[in-house]
Image (cartoon, rainbow, N blue to C red; front, side, top):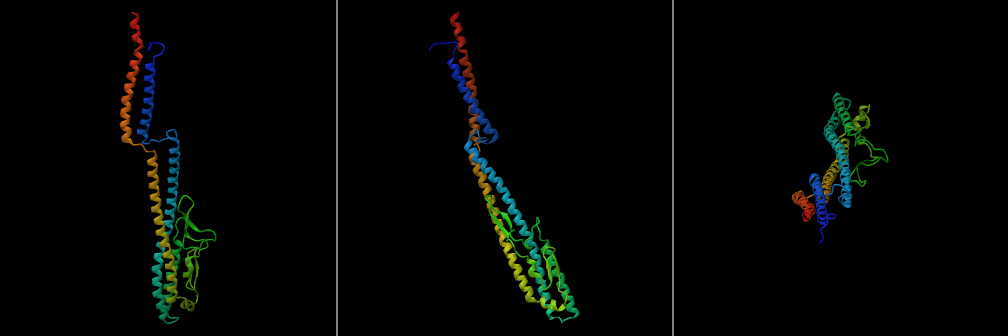
Length: 286
């Protein structure tokens, strides 16, 4: 091979090798720094697009979880108030039996009815106060306006109360007048009307209807728990899946980094040797 001072083939080859090593070293250093083998679309456009889409899905699942937790809180508040109402109705049943045993228009009957009235007012006040974030499951819902929460990112809904659902307070009027929105209750004026309404059978009917409502809320609370568990598992699976696609194997990259750094140093030396070959030609002219 002819020696030339215009073209140093050895230096060109050494430079190309060194450039390739530097490029590989830059890639490896970026993976070590970020912990990602695909940190931008430049690394792998298809994988980057998939990972970005799944990260967006994970963010949307956070919104679903918040919606389910809100629904759970609405139901839990209703159940807490419901327990208070059940206790009150149990006491009202005992009072109803005593009222029927008392002599009509007697002082005893008047006092028992006053106790019954006081507890009935507490019941309606508790029902009206069972509100979370402006939602009360014991109040009537407007037609076409159900109380719902999101269950997935595709628009799935879970109904807490159907549109046009009646107020639970309606079954607890006991001959009086109830205002579910205001949480007020007004007893019948005449003692005879009260005696007709304040019976153990009427209280039992109201108690059965109300506990049926509570049972429905309890079932919905369990359903929301299961939905929350599912969303949590879904998020974990998505996070693991994205990691499988874009996370770097740091142990492998660390070993590769050391090898490339050594290769880089050898490349610099090889380039230096190749560049010095031209100066050796000067000896021929001495």
